[in-house]
Amino acid sequence: MYYKARMSTGRPSEKEFTIIDLFAGCGGFSQGFLKAGFKVIAASEFWNPAIETYKENHKSVSLIEGDITLTEKKQELYDSVQGKNVNVIIGGPPCQGYSQAGNRNPDDPRGQLYLDFIEIIDTLKPDLFVMENVKGLLNMKHVNPELRQKELVMFKLNCDRLQRYKDLKRYAAQRDLNGEEKTVFDTLKRDLKKIQDSINSSLIPLLDKILNKFKEIGYRVSWKILNSADYGVAQARERIIFIGTKHDAFKLKFPEPTHFKETSQKSIDIYTNSPSGDKKSWITSKSILEQYENWPESTEKSHLFTRHSKDFIKRLQDTPIGGNVYENYTDAWWRLDPDKPARTVKENHGGVFVHYKFDRVCTPRELAALQSFDNEFLFKGNKSVILKQIGNAVPPLMAKAIAMMIRENLEKLNPKREEITTSV
Image (tube, rainbow, N blue to C red):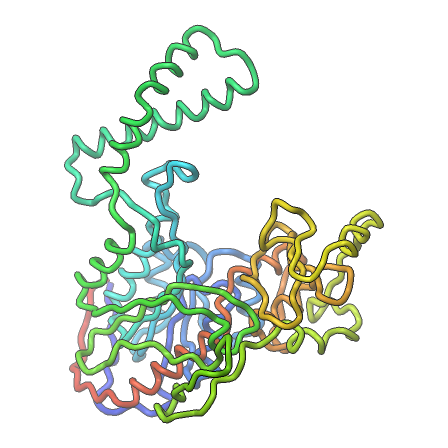
């Protein structure tokens, strides 16, 4: 089977700028690029509630539903864009690093999804790609791919031994270990540091693996930590953004911030590269949420109130601005400061932000607004899954800032490429 790409032969017009959104979620990334004048021609998503929301808001997009790691789903994607020019591929493949404290499976498929993202880029060969991920990726580690088979076997054995130690430690806190269990536990405890050191020696930074993989397929890559509050989002949300291209003429740069924590610094307009005077202040949560203070409850708009018990309402009343309902939480159950952006919007299993004015938690609609979704964007599913979709989304306004910078550079490109046929 083949994918035949229609390669551009001259300077493209704005209408010809096209994107594919992989691991699209509910569509925040797509929304930002749409606002910048791009056309979304295809997308992929695995989770059904996010699929329903994406389809509701992007009716003309060819959405590949299901596991994009499967060969048949990749082929479905290739078929959907057959003969079309693909300028940009965007997406946020979930990444899971190896952690001795958490994920202990070195073959965890959640840590390998970026490889599918890269494979699709290598096949479709877009002008550029943009990949978004959590800031924690900088500290993630994966198994060194250059390990010899004997070393890999030993690594997995030590992972199993570490897991056994942790299991027995948990059992010992609940009951008396039997004789055999105690012998194994004592042996593993004695060798624990050696086991951990051996595991660590077999790991390399995930960031290095990702960059090397992109280099192998011929893409120059640059990355940077961006804060959504710097681009007009009423939320301090830091994410790592990768931008890559196979064109030497394309400048790998990131959009200049349009907003700043303080207003004393001068800025450069991200679209014209001309001085734009003082930057605007960071957007506050109150400036975004006050429009909803008199809104009635609405299922269609996901403006859904939580029914709190009297005891919990008393807790809320006692929680000051910037404080938490529960001492052991940080972002969950945090009371918004009306004069500052929100902290990172997360799903937090229902432990969402507390309103700065009312003794209740924020509605999904309010949290979506803090993520910079328009009121016309409609979410599908029950309240719990809507909160998860919002928490996982890329803020559309930050995505738009990235997209505008990319569009500016695409307009300067005049690649003369011949049609190619790629076997897939």
